[in-house]
Image 1 (cartoon, rainbow, N blue to C red):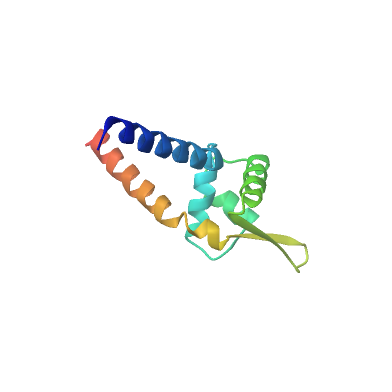
Image 2: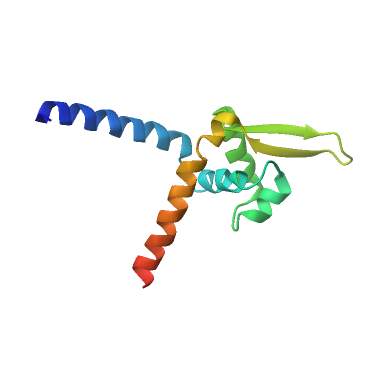
Length: 115
């Protein structure tokens, strides 16, 4: 591969990673997606209890942004009191493999650092 082709491919990949990180940016988005990877749907309060340290306000903000990016679907349930559930869209589910790879790498990294 020539240096010019390498640089072109490298720039293209770096731009694609940057685009992905623009969508997944933030302390909590990947955690929200990870929680939703493990269940068909979760209520707001369940997600809140699943993610240690996140506030109501921050969870609401992250869910709205993920919904705007078409990764999460919000459904108002016909219950009393009214509740809302969230689930990954088919497009959001395409991140499951990425999340699982990140989780595996994170576990290996923890062992590498601690062990």
